[in-house]
Image (cartoon, rainbow, N blue to C red; front, side):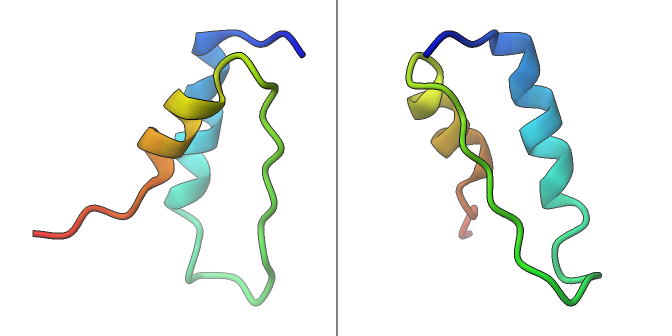
Length: 46
């Protein structure tokens, strides 16, 4: 239920390893920073 905005950096770091492994990654952030977690992990399109 509670979370720290500083923990979002860990979620962002996971983006760097996707595509290099043969597994899925599931992240379950707490409710309070969930919107910021989605924004940081969203794929950017040019």
